[in-house]
Image 1: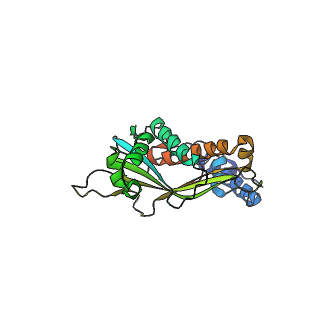
Image 2: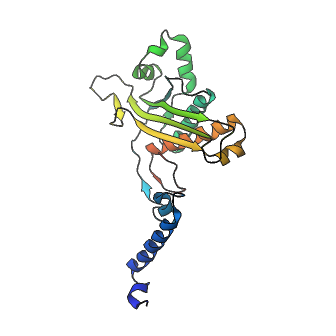
Length: 231
């Protein structure tokens, strides 16, 4: 029998009880098809929640460096796309005020002896940057013929913010994060999305644009809208 106290809509906790009851019921039937986090989101929990920036970049010039020391990226255009997409994402969200053009580093590479042996901070200073946003490539994969149950593409990088200024006052070289391995960020493209994109270049563009958005979110406050891609 339903008694008045457990269906009283005038009490806030009464509505929460209904929501959590629904959550429990759906959780029991969801199996492995949806994570609890996504399930909570689609039931309305967490939407609009403010997420603070993990780090605030300098207002001075920032240099984006993508480091693929192990040659993991077998589609070189993806690195250039990521640099361009990230520069646009940082400026659009006002996460950075000035981005050092990619052409600056390309010119330095052509005119500087032993350029590839230069350190991150040295390259940053040579390019006129105050900070270097360093992206170390950890994983990269793209296929034009994915299986439905697998990702068609994914891109994983470790992010660090490096001080490029002269260290006269003993500023920390690595400004963020505290962990030496960096902050790992990933982006994925599903088989269905790849089928719509069709070409390898189009898949790369979708992938790097998505990764750039995920990286830019680290440096500006935002509110949860669509369920955020894993970071």
